[in-house]
Length: 134
Image (cartoon, rainbow, N blue to C red):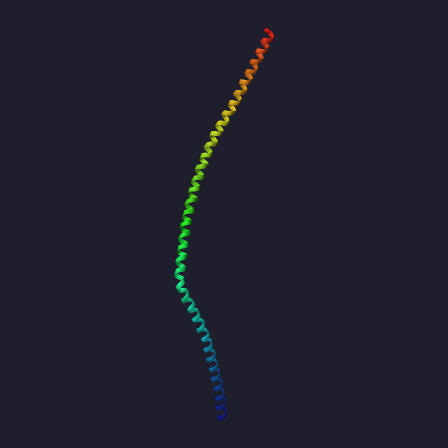
């Protein structure tokens, strides 16, 4: 029975050793792949680290230009708003002047109509006088 147990234990240990060896081989291959992938990533990051500061500086300059353009646009919009308000005021004053002129023209037309009426009455009176005085 001891021989049976020792043979069983030997086979069991051999299977466990083979499983451990297989696990170690698979782990080593996985670590090699991971190492190669990490080395590739490291090379990419190193390559990018040389171009990144210049790229960031260019982006910073673009943002500064956009900020200046935005400030200028905001100032221009404020000026346009002031100019539109001033133009609206001038137009309102001009409309008041035109309304006054329109009222004067209407009054002048009425006066002209009255004068024409007086002239017609005067001409009729002259005709009647000629008719009677002959």
